Length: 203
Image (cartoon, rainbow, N blue to C red; front, top):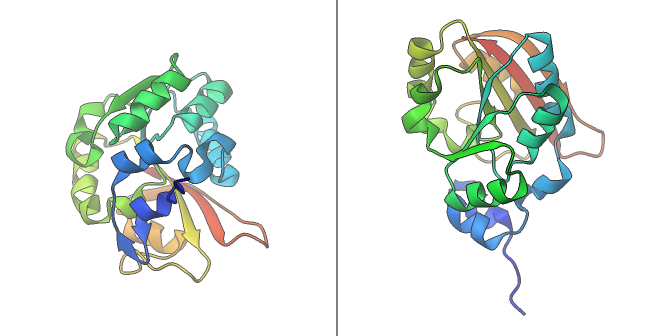
């Protein structure tokens, strides 16, 4: 019997970025155990940000199989425009949640196309777009001024091997981003190896 590879084999392995998301979604049934809604601290905090700042439209970048989009919809009534670079991920998301709005896209190239939305959500994708961040910041300044940027991201407790030249914690990330932080949440349990974060910036 063929052993299923870990999703890590297609994303970041031993400190090296691989980024083969299309193959990952074809080969792995439930990468990041998305169906169980991991990272509940950051995901719930994102919903609270939407409520507290009256965010009524959202473009979700890195939607995967769509489970968080469904949670956002159930809790807020907002149907996000949910984007992923993987065609297979979008096909599977549409099959799971046909009432939601999924689209294949590469936000490093097409973010400006979504300038009508109140908020950009970078959903656990920061490590995969590090080289493009500065250009994305310029796009946000030009097309999303006065709107919001939400970043849900996990950091690793003393074991992070990738992205260390950029930032290794929520506070370092906030300092790196050129926007005003208007809300932030950090959550972890004693037994966790990760720290969940959710940060809301005003662009």
